[in-house]
Length: 173
Image (cartoon, rainbow, N blue to C red; front, side, top):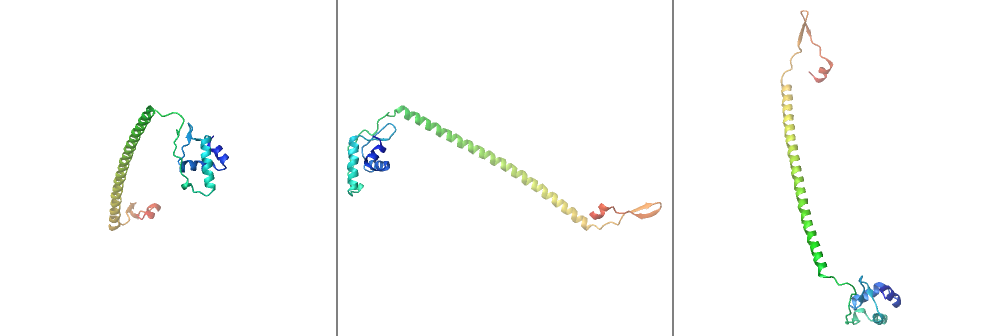
């Protein structure tokens, strides 16, 4: 009989049956999947526990049954499987170490790449700063030097002043 059948028989939930087995450390058999399997003796023990609890006895006061049965029916794991599992764990650990090393090398490469880019940008900033300084000094010199008079053009022996074109008048030349 499985847990749900035993619970229906006693009129309690399956989790109640499971709690009783665990808290009272009852020696119940398990099938190959690890589920409890109750025989007639086990049902009698559970009925007694249920009656005691119904009469007001606390679960802590109920003496656990110390008779141990074979707790599991099924295949016993062999040593070979444990060795196989250990080998797999070792391989996984090696893979994790390799993965971490690869991640570290990728991160290092990216840092070096970023450092190069930053250095290039700093050099460009220096060049632009120098160019701005040169242009500022040229502008200062242009402002300091007196403006020359408008150039004179001789036309048929007469002195004519050269007319400014529209663009040069806008630029202040």
